[in-house]
Amino acid sequence: MPRLSRRYLLATLGTIVFALATRSVPAFAGLLDKLLGHEQAKPTIPITPNEEFYLTSYRSPPTIRVNDWSLSIKGLVERPVSLTYEQLVAMPTVSQIVTLECVGNTVAGEFISTAEWGGISLRTLIEEAGASITAYDVIFQAADGFSDSIRIDRAMAGDVMIAHRMNGVPLPQGHGFPARIIVPGCYGMKSVQWLTEIEVVDQDYKGYYPQKGWTDEAIVKTTSRIDVPGHGATLRGRRHKIEGLAFAGTRGISLVEISMDGGERWTSVTLDPPLSSAAWSFWRYDWAAPASGRYQLVVRATDGTGRLQSSIEQDPAPDGATGLHEMTVTVEM
Image (cartoon, rainbow, N blue to C red; front, side):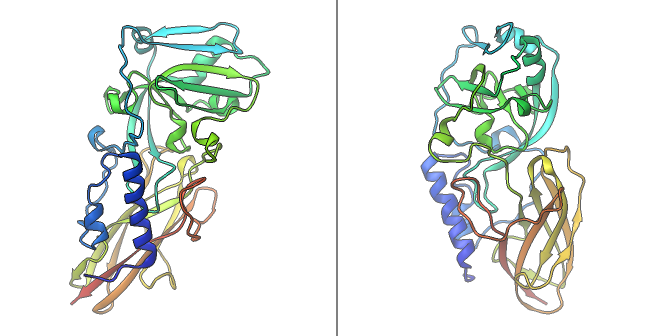
């Protein structure tokens, strides 16, 4: 068995612990193999199938009878609104491809996925309700008592949506049926599921996670990972394809670099255009190994503002994990 780096071991153990704590699905798929160095490498696909989209189901999906469900817009608005499911889905629909990442995700962890979401613009709904000039926060309440909020200016930016469809079908129960919020560029905690109420208030509101000491701003941090080859892989021959992804929320990715010697020297890779400004980016690199031996692969990304991904190792709490993904491979010629 290949020797595991301390960083890799801790990152994988952290993913397992988080999966156990949250009963996430697919929580355990491939984790044991990854820990043992038997990871089966496969490229990530641009749009995650609904059944493979990450779930953090420490909250069991509440039972919602759609005929009894409604979505209310209340608080500091001139015209409070209450929408039935039929009224919601009958409204003009917009769609966008957005990557969501759990705030508890570890470096190169599995709790990140991408879908095409369909629904209505939150800005449109708030404009119709007529928000007060004193509005400060917009609170999202879920059917199970969970809540979170975003600032009014973020709510009115135009890209936040009330989604009732996911990859062309009605939202699955586990992903927020009948409706959920999608906040591009923020950790998934802000994209409240099983939505029942939107309230405009004139003060700062701390939701479920911020009340427990987690970030309130919840802006995703720049991350990158290597998907192919897998950790501990033995590569035969001289030429090999290295593939992976990078994500920096709505800031985008401007550059991805890879190192074959543990971070001493860096080489830029080929970036594919993302499916949207809020989606992950895929990268690839055709590597000609100079000789047989063991190589320490490391990847790093630079976001669209020119800021380099942090190499400082930090746990997910309280505002998202940082650090670089690295792995060891062996080349045999």
